[in-house]
Image (tube, rainbow, N blue to C red; front, side):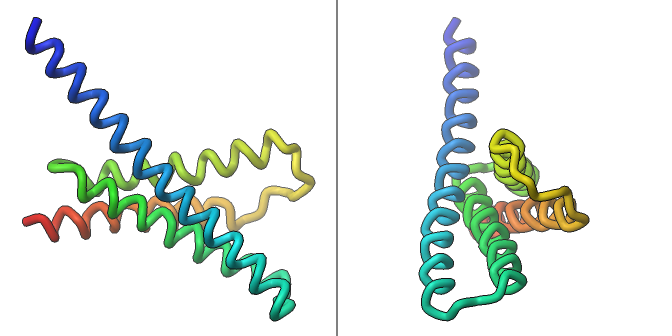
Length: 132
């Protein structure tokens, strides 16, 4: 019975750590989007520039979430960071489909997904090396 409670507490901790890191990623994204909107107003950036800045923002936010998750994990921080990056971008895709946006699928969707997974995985690996 005690071992079952320990396993249950461990599973809850893993989910809690994952959700905390995911919320940090989205917090960084929200702050970055507000900053990007301000830069768009002040400097009147082109659409292409804004798209590239959004890709960089998504990558940095998923890296940051991977760092947070990797700092809290003792094992498989890179793998869990990669899953964080996939979930992070998957939620963006679901929201865009739910909004029924007119934007067509572009070739860059898979590339951005790869970047967010890679960035979050590298963030987790970076923190796991830092602990050792």
